[in-house]
Length: 426
Image 1: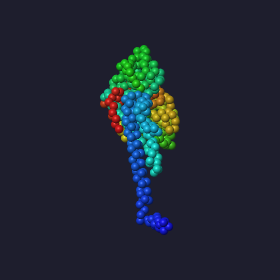
Image 2: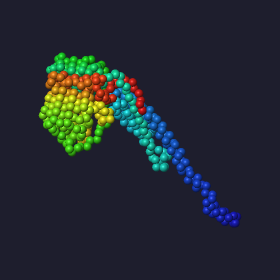
Image 3: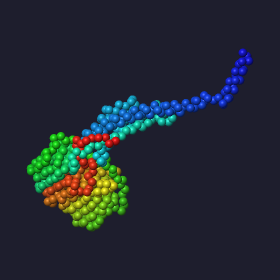
Image 4: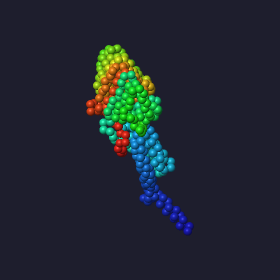
């Protein structure tokens, strides 16, 4: 026994120092990545299950929002998502919803998933994402929203009046008024509204010889602003064009005009094709003739707006090139520019002719159109969009909607789609 113990100690010492038999350390090293791979499989499997549930809930939410297609569609979509997404404990998903310039509805959702095993190798969370897009097909061929008042509560939101005859004539036009007030639409004098469809959330009031045809829809829901998320250009002021003002007849070129554009006197101005960015100011004139083919005026920043007060002729045609920033738009107002909010109102008064072939988009503003001549010469197709609209005077204001007579592209967001076929595109 006394000889066995020293012998065992000697053999154990040899085994400890023998590198040819280091199997256990090798196995120990190999086990670490093996367990990491097994843990990754478990974590990613759990994340995929969450993503599948999130995608199903997001699809249901975006379809519900698109089907609702009202000013509160995103709230509807959010409620459906929150009600249907049953996530594991500790997982919270945040959905966002947007209406796109092409009239489609998009939803995205993100949820951080805390891993159980991957944290060992420095991956504590996995971001789980889902995206979905739905489209509502137009239901009335050739029908568009050609006059849209966005305000939800104004009383009235649209006012049409005049001692002469002020008529909105648009055979394929939908006149949409979002206000739920009583009245939401007010007509007086000899004013009349004539369109293919009148959708007023609130009531209509007619006095004098005024009339509305056809009768407003018995049931009407609000329409979301179709261009609230329209892509907007980056604005950089050009010192040479700052506070542009002229009283001479000339050709004006596209650019960024900071501080506004001012025209005075009986001048003749031609706008070359392109985008005119007006930042922190207004477009104002006191008479003259203004023409432009393929032009857009983009208004943005503090106090942006329009003040046309002279007896002038305007003949503007929107760009037809879809590669341009605003195809189909004559005027595009950004109510919340980077340098401040736009003005609360714009005025087009005393004009002899307002020929705007394209969209006049002025959200967040009360737009007042006043005529003193016998006729406002109509273009083949026009769409007016504003917060509230007032049309007054002794003239005849005409909105046409004959798209066969114009080469200007009609923005998809204006296509009438009430009750249209609904489907997921993504």
